[in-house]
Structure formats: C-alpha cells, structure tokens
Amino acid sequence: MFERPRGVLEAVRKDVEVERSGILQHIGHTPLVALGRVGKGLAVPVLAKCEHLNPGGSIKDRIAVAIVEDAELRGVLRPGMTLVEATAGNTGVGLALVAAARGYGLVCVMPEKMSLDKRVALASLGAQVVITPNAPPSSPENFRNVAQRMAEERGWFLTDQFKNPANVRAHHETTGAEILEQTGGEVGAFVCGAGTGGTLTGVGQRLKRTLPHVRVVLADPLGSGLADWVETGVLGADAAYAVEGIGGSEAPENLHRDVLDGAERVSDAESFAMVKRLVHEEGLLVGGSSGTNVVAALRVAARRDLRGPVVTVLPDSWDRYRAQPWLRAWAQ
Ligand code: PMP
Image (cartoon, rainbow, N blue to C red; front, side):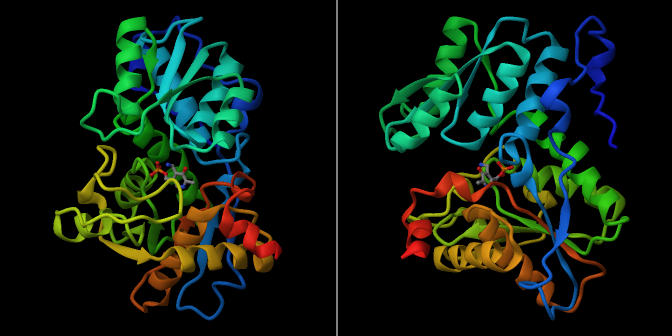
C-alpha cells in the first residue's frame, strides 16, 4: 500500500479533513502488466500500467482527487463550493466522482465542437455543462478563458489541470512511486503522450530522482506540434488527427521540457491498429491514446541500449469511444 502523499501545507491546515474514504481510496494502485504478445521478442519487456481500471475509467481520477485535496489543504476550497474546469473528457469524469464523494458542485466548460455524447455523459454524472463558441486561446470566448472568468466572478474554484502543479505532483507521488515499487526499481524508459503533460512530467521526475539513467520519451500523435518542441524547442506545424487527449499546438505549462529525452511520432492508423491488438491479443480494453503510447514504447524497447523494461500507461478505456468511426469499423 502507498501512503497518501502529505503536502507541505498539511501542517498549516490541520483542521481540514483530508482522509480519503469510500471509493476515493481506490484511485490509483493500478496493475502493471507485461505486454506478452504485442511486446514479444524485443530487447526488453514492455510493461503497461492499467489506468483504465481506475474508478472513473481513466488516469485522470488521480489528478482530480489530488487537485481537490491540495485546494482543501490550502484553504481555497471549502465545503459546499463549486469546482469549475475547462474539460471535455476524462478529467470531467474524474472530477464528477470526486465532487460527488466530497459534496461539491461541478461546472464543466466545453467548446461547442465537442460531441453531444460527451455533454450528455458529464451532465448525467451531475455536472452543469456550459457550452462556448469554438474560439482560439486568444479569444475571451475560448472555453478556458470562460472557465477562468466564471471562477473569478462567481467565487468558484478553478481546478486548472493544464497549470495546476498538483497535477504533476499527483503523478510524481502516486503513479511514479507505484511504478518504482512494482518494477522493483528496474526501469529503462518511460514513454507516454502528453495532454496536460502531468503524467510525463510527474512520472519522469520521480523515476529520474531514483534512476538517473531512465529515458523519458514523449509519444506524440502525427499532427501534434509537441514532438518538434521536445526536439528543437520550437513547436511544429499542427494538423488534424483523431487520437483524443494527447498532443496539441501549444506546449502546456505542466509539460516540462527538461525532463524529456526524446519523442516518437505515431500516426492515427498505427495507434488504432495497436488498440485493436491490445483488445484482441492482450484482453486490454483500452482507448486510442493507449495505442499511441504502446506503439512508441515498442519502438523504444526495440533499441538495444536500455538498462531495464520500458514502462507506459494505458490512460483510458475503450467504452469512451464506442461511437467513434475507428472503433465502429472493427465490427464491420
Ligand atoms: N490519454 C487520454 C485519453 C487523456 O484524456 C489524457 C489527458 N488529457 C492523456 C492521455 C494525457 O494525460 P496528461 O494530461 O497527464 O498529459
């Protein structure tokens, strides 16, 4: 068992109830499994952390509970308050379950391009959904700017996963620590995609603290500008891609370039073909970004210069994508 991380501010707010109870105790501590079939014959094993088995079905449960607890400890989140996040997906689900378990309101702000499915999913979990026009980050109507303004005007707590350091800390103190324990401290490389960058930065920092030789590699969808940024410091041109939750045209604040040793670019076709193999050959019922992560992890594992297994994460579950053309095509 892993001890709940203790923040420095815990000493300041001893009066705050921070013990996890009920379902919140079961966030994290996910299995780490070897990819025996898809990773067969490589120089080192490839191990995947089953984040799709979290209570809310994704890796984002970890940051949802960590961000809420951090804000409670700092005294900026008090009983009965409302959380607001600019999200369309997994973070909204994680926050919805934490809000329910801890008695907070939740408002999710999302751009109108998001599917009706996603709006209905979050609303059914008890969130109030606010739809904004599809507007660039510079516009006041952009969904992230609207969320920030609503927080300021109405006294809501902005969870702010792209900037909030509690996101990185959650992965440093839980995901990274669990990987060290589950591998007995033997890791050659850690490979995964970046949405907010919290997973890659937090796990990368934690592993390097104990194992300085570990390679930390970004798995990036072809079409994202982040791989170029990792390699050169300048964002690449962005183009459309279908994998969800990772990549982008801006480097998020929680993605720290100094932790990264390289990047692997993965096409949609490669990602979705790998998801199909993970489902049909490994029994791992995972979503699109898991395919991206595993394709990149296999490439890194094929090199003969690592001192231990390659570890990656399977961020979410296949059932989020049942309406998507790439998954529907399997049934034809
Ligand atoms: N995969 C999926 C499906 C996600 O929703 C996210 C989060 N946006 C990620 C991967 C990336 O995680 P992080 O935000 O920690 O970079």
